[in-house]
Length: 196
Image 1 (tube, rainbow, N blue to C red):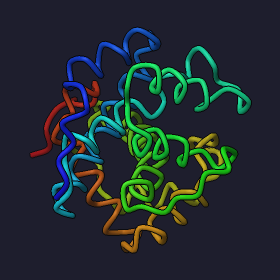
Image 2: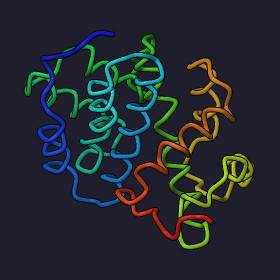
Image 3: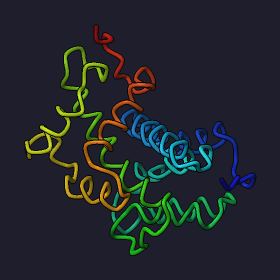
C-alpha cells in the first residue's frame, strides 16, 4: 500500500468541500462516495485516507460550475493551486466521461463505479419506509434499475460499466455499497428506523 503524506487532513478537505458546496444533497453525496471509496480501499489494500479524499472532493466544484465545460476542470485547477498531486486530480478528472481522461488506475475505476451508484442507492433509500437505508435490500436496488422513470438522471449504463471495469459482479458491488452506506446512515440522513 502506498501512503500519501502530501495530502491534507480530512478536516481540511471537508473545509474545502464546504467552501464551494452549500447544498445538503451534494455534501451527502460527497460523504457517500467518500465512504464507498474508503471501503473499497480497505478491501483492495490501498490507502483509505487518499481514496476517501478523492471521493469527498470529486464533485466539490459542481455546485458553482455544473456545466460540462467547467466541471470537473475548475475543481482540478483549484486542487492544483492548493497543492493536491497530479494523480489525485487525474482521478477526479477521469470520473467525467466528457473530460477525455481515461480511467486506468484502480482508484479511477473505483471512483467511477461508486459515483452514480451512491446517488442511486440514496434515491432508493429515500423511497423506503421511514426513508431508511437499513431496510433497503440490494435486490430492491437492482429492481429499480429497470424503472427508467425512477431517479431518471442517474445513468444506469455508467453503473453497469463501472462495475464491469472494476472487475466486480454488479450484484456484489450493489450489496457492498449498500452495506457501506448503511454504516454512515445517520450522516446521510438515511437512518430512519433500523430494520428488525
